[in-house]
Amino acid sequence: MREPDDLPPLREVVHKHDLMPKRALGQNFLFDLNLTGRIARSAGPLAGHEVLEVGPGPGGLTRALLAEGAERVIAVERDARCLPALAEIGARYAGRLEVVEADALELDPAALFSGTRPARIVANLPYNVGTALLVRWLTVPDWPPRWSSATLMFQREVADRIVADERRPDDYGRLGVLCGWRTRARILFDVSPQAFVPPPKVTSAVVQIEPRADPLPCSVAALERITRAAFGQRRKMLRQSLKGLGRDPRELLDAAGLPETARAEEIPVAGFVALANALA
Ligand code: SAM
Image 1 (cartoon, rainbow, N blue to C red):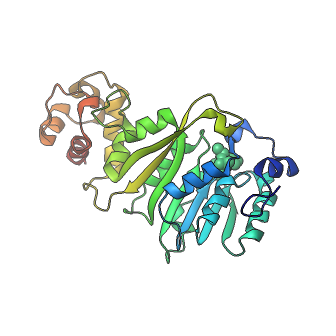
Image 2: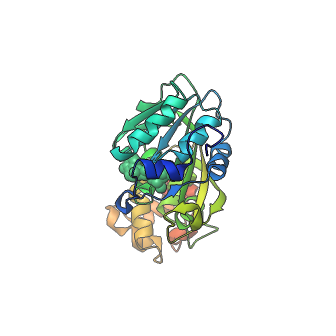
C-alpha cells in the first residue's frame, strides 16, 4: 500500500534499504506520517520557503515538509545508508529536495540557504548532537539569522531547559539564558516514546524557536563566560561564583545593578546581559 504522497510506507522504506537504526547516530525514526505532518504544519507556512532539515534519515519528516509545500528542502544527513531512500523522495518531488551528506555540526546554516527565499529550520534532531547544534546556531556573530523559525524535537528535559527562565529555576541554566537572549522559545507538544522506532527511554517535545529581531546588545563570548561561571556553581552567590573571571565580582555586580547576594538561578536574562557588558 502507498501513502498519500504515492511513496511507500516508511516501514517498507527502512526494510528495503536495510536501515537498521544506529544508536550512535541518534537514530529514532518516525514512521507515522500524521505525526510528521503535524510537526511540519506547526513550523508555520512553508509555501515559498526553504527548509533546512538536519537528519532526514529515511525521510518521514522530509516527506511531510515537501507535502506541506516547502519550495526547497535542504536535508543534511550524516549516514550515507539513507541516501538511496532520500533519492526516491527527491524523484517524487523533482527539483525540491537537496540532500547534503555531511555532519551538520560542521555546516553553517547561513551558507546553505540561498538568501533569496524565506527560510526555516525543522528537524527531529539526533539527541546526541541536538543541544550542540542549537548552541552553534544561536552563537553566530551575525544576528538575526536568515531563518525565521526553528521547529525542533528534543528530549523533553532539554526542551524544558531551552524555555526556562528565572521563574523555573530548576531548569534554568546557560541554555535558557542563551535562548532567552536571542530568541523566543516555547514548547508546542510532547511526543511519546512509542512514536519512534526504536522507542527512546524518554518523552520528547517539539519546540518552536523564533529569533528576536533586536536582542539586547551583548558580546556572545562575554555572555558565555559569565553564564559558565555563574551556573558552574549555581547554588553559590554570584559574588563567589564569579571570582574566577579575573575581575572583582562585587564591581561587576554593582555595574550590572545586581545584589551581591544574588544566585545565578534568580537572575533574569537582562541581568546576565548587564553582567556580560560589565565584564566586556
Ligand atoms: N528525521 C528522521 C525521522 O524523523 O524519522 C530521523 C530522525 S533521527 C532522530 C536523527 C537523524 O540524524 C538520523 O538519520 C541520523 O543519521 C542523523 N544524524 C545524526 N548525527 C548527525 C549529524 N551530526 N549531522 C547530520 N545528521 C545526523
